[in-house]
Image (cartoon, rainbow, N blue to C red; front, side, top):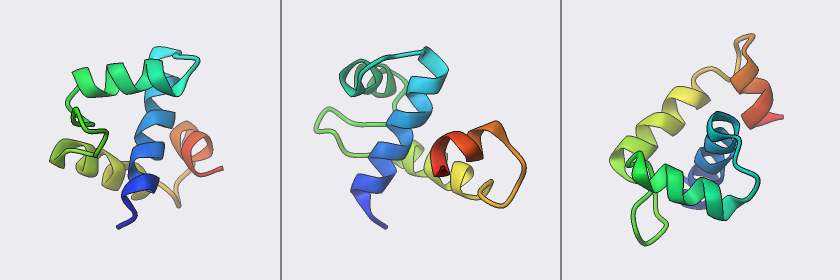
Length: 69
C-alpha cells in the first residue's frame, strides 16, 4: 500500500469534514482523530479509514467523488 496515497486520501477526507483550507490544518485535525501519527504516517485507524473509503470507490457517494475524482 502506498503510504503517501493513504495520507493524502485521509487529508482530503479531513478537509471535507472540517472544512480545512490547507493540508497543515487538516493534518492537525487528522492527528487529533488518531488517523495520522506525529511523524505524518497513517495509524492503524487511518489505514482502516482509507480501506473504508476505498471500498466505496464503486458506489454512488459524495465521498467517492471527493476522494477518488
